[in-house]
Length: 152
Image 1 (spheres, helix red, strand yellow):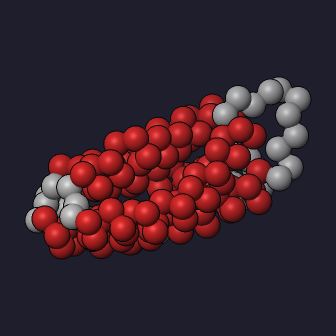
Image 2 (cartoon, helix red, strand yellow; image 1 turned 30 degrees about the vertical axis):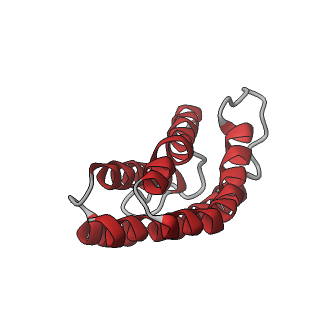
């Protein structure tokens, strides 16, 4: 996923401030996801769960990203697009909503971890979230590409 971000930055970076902000936020989220999952370059003890603080900080970043998408970036894409962009948004937004539901579910489970909370399913939930994030990024890239092709 990080390679795809780099490709997106090369393709669209510098063309529009909204796109740059969106890609920067996505990159931050992915770096923290990789750190939490123990993926390269953050390979650590695969047996140990991340700390409570790192999980909660990731949840905050995740909610910031999801919220910014829905309340900031998507609106800019639609407002900056012709009718074609609005039609594309109408097609893609319902699909993005499914990934939002996955992010909200993850956040509901882990945003405020109690001392006695059972984290047995954490790895599975994190993996499901990773799949949803990848799907979301592909959908968002369609919106970005539309803005880029139509107006920049």
